[in-house]
Length: 273
Image 1 (cartoon, rainbow, N blue to C red):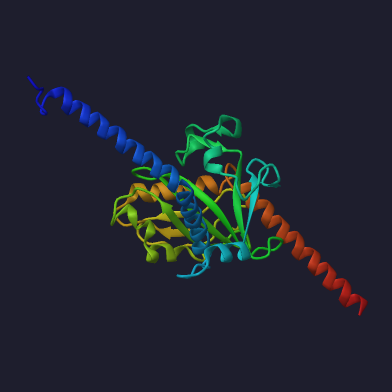
Image 2 (cartoon, rainbow, N blue to C red):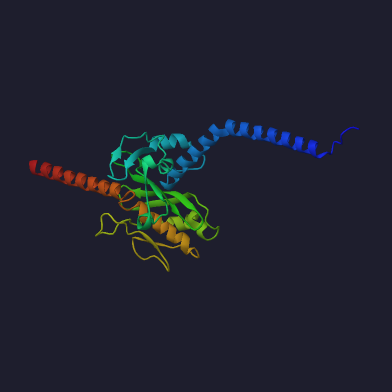
């Protein structure tokens, strides 16, 4: 007697074969599209860097604009000095933070951004002349209400005044914490100062409820106190000596030294005349 086509054995055999075929198709597509996905991710990263620097325009050649105006440099977060330890074009600080050999553990009060681990080196992006940049683009990240927020902070060439902020990856609630993407909220950051006049290392920038009134204050997100706290915490972390604080302090010192030398040179020229 012939076996029924609806037997359990045949049904399982067909289902198993179909799963194998589908998995092969999906795996093949993933491998074939991997290079394109990586290229798109790289273009997205560069477009976000250009956007936070107010250099992005729809339809522009992103690769050309980035290569002409942006210079990446690797920074030793412990010393604030530029480093040649890694290639800035390929170094991934986010991946380095996962490697115990390239990072350190954070805990307690030292981990206000909720990162758990911090890379020893990070990448900054210099806008314009790398010897006298118009802006410094700093990568920032930290925990929000529902997960990790990742973005960039643009600082003007004085090493203290904020030019812009953007979060390109987050899982905050739409209409509430998700307003970190709202252009009107992001516009408030322009011209704000990171450090108070009497403080050279610890950042003073913060989000406040009820209306910002000072040069180091930005309006908190309405109805999203935990997301606002997350933004404040990650900025306090990345702009402190644990993050880019040492780098920014050295950058400002170099500016002051250059200005003093320029004034001395001008004075000598005047006396010589």
